[in-house]
Image (cartoon, rainbow, N blue to C red; front, side, top):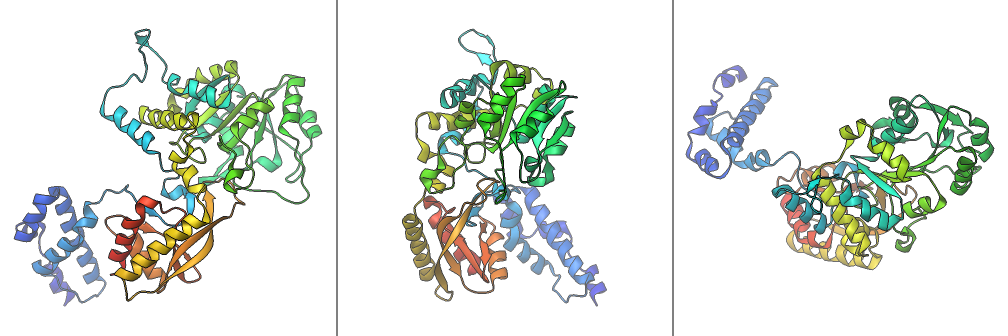
Amino acid sequence: MNMEKLKKLPKVDGILKREEIQKLCNTYPRWVVVEAIRRVIEEKRRELLSGADIAVSEDSVASEVVNRIEVFAQPSLRRVINATGVVLHTNLGRAPLAREAVSAMASVAMNYSNLEYDLSKGKRGLRYTHVVDLLKKITGCESALVVNNNAAAVFLVLNTLAREREVIVSRGELIEIGGSFRMPDVMTSAGAILREVGTTNKTKLSDYENAINENTALILRVHPSNYRIVGFTERPSLKDLVALGKKYSVPVYEDLGSGLFVDVRSFGLPYEPTVQESLKAGVDLVSFSGDKLLGGAQAGIILGRADLVERIRKNPINRVLRIDKLTLAALEATLRLYLGNDLKKIPVVALLSQTEEELKSRAERVKALLEERLPNWSFDLVRDTSAVGGGALPEAKLPTWCVAIEGDCLEVERRLRTIPKVPVIGRIKEDRVLLDMRTVREEEVELLVEMVERALR
């Protein structure tokens, strides 16, 4: 019987001629409508082959296309509401940008710019100049360079300063970052020779000193931004490593992972070293990410001694790793907010510094609106903890308030993340879906309620 139905599956051209489909073509691009028709027909073909008893008339196919065209019209990369409570959610794009950064990107994107043109001299300039002076003023560094992410920064530093030479690093700092990228692999790819010292939990200053020889190029210190070793541990201070480096004329380079310009202890978070502290300790170079705790666009920022930065800048590989005009515009705008002490305008800083009272008030408002619009569903207020995310501050527990949705948690979660307009990504805990107010911004409340209502109805 299904084989007969397969023969009766309507053709794309036949569906396109229908009045309701022609109306769709007046609203959406024709290729979107055609693709939707093809996918619906193909899905029905697969269902028939699997033995399902379904309707295959033109009416049924056209009706399915009308119902689902909004899904097909959506771009693949699009906005979602982050209700997970993870502030720097790697899968959800990490740091949201400040309005000033987005405005700067739009201005540069829609117009010509002085990306590599010196307006005062009337000749070609360097793209890095747009952010170098800002980084100098904020951190006190001698010079700066920006590439497309911190892994690229680490690779470029090692390739420039330690190719075919040894880099001393503690065994306890041979980290793995997201996507299974491991520090030993990055070092090998950069052409550096890894010289491990110490043990996983204890590395002494003498371990570093005993490893220094005529082929030593760098002492590398890697900040454990995404993990902690506790208990019976030992690690020399950064100042001691710097003093050792100066004694033997070996540069000290620190990979901070997630860069930070402000003391997060004021937000109730555990201590995390700032970029300024590393430079004050005397490191020759430091690198970090721009799109994590810094709250800017994806970038790898290298700061330090002017002579070393200049050598790194002249490495031909730098051109492969350089950032584009949009990243530069976003980074410059974000740095200007730091320089002007407008920290609350940086979304990541604003999200991390929210008080419990603010979050509870927002949760109560969301719960009341949902109960009003969805009287057949049950909602609850839950006090819980959020995470910083992005491989930063792994031990930090941020107190938060959530709205819990009672019901089949897997089905509710599926409905929320498959809403065509703006998907809502929550988290499941104790068989309930939690909507964490830590990462639902004030201006998103009405949209969140609308999307949850649409999903659950």
